[in-house]
Image 1 (cartoon, rainbow, N blue to C red):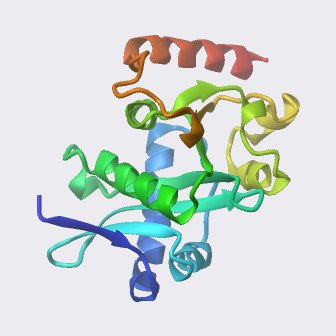
Image 2 (tube, rainbow, N blue to C red; image 1 turned 30 degrees about the vertical axis):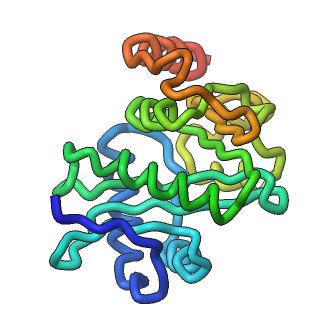
Image 3 (spheres, rainbow, N blue to C red; image 1 turned 90 degrees about the vertical axis):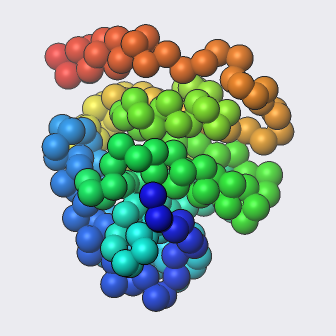
Length: 206
C-alpha cells in the first residue's frame, strides 16, 4: 500500500469537495447520522494545520481526518474520519486515526481526546488507542461542539435527552491516566453491537 499520510495544508484545498462528498455518501450508505461540513470548513482546518490527509502515489485522495479543540485546548476531538471506497479494507482508517491521535497530543499537550460515534469500527480503533467509554457529562461542555450536531439526523434525540445521551457513544482518552497497553478491557464487537441495537430500539421507538 503506497499511501502517504501527511498534515494537510493549503496545497490540499483542492481535495475539500471530494472529502465532504465521501463523508456524506458513506453516512448515507450506513444509515447513520452525521454532522455535515462544508468544503470551506475543511479548508479552514487545513489552513490551521488541524487536519491530516492520505494520498496515494498518484495524488489520489485516500483518506482524511481533522482536529477540533474546545475550552481553550482542554479537550480535543477528531472528526470526519473517512477512507475513500477505493482504499478500504487495507487498515488505512486505523493508520489515519493513529497519526492524527499522536499529532494532536503533540499540538495540544495535556488535552483530553474525545469522540462520539455510532461506528463500531471507530470504537474499536479508539479502544486500541486507549480511549474508554464515558457518559457525555465527561466530554466538553462547550455548546459550540454540540451545535455541530444540528445537521445530524439524530439531533432531535440528543436534544430531547438534554444533550446527555444519544445513539452515539462517547469515548475519552485522558493522557493523565496513562492507560495500560493493551487496554484492561479489550473491545468486544459483539457486545457493543448488541448495546448499540438496544440503544437504537429505546431511542427510536420513543
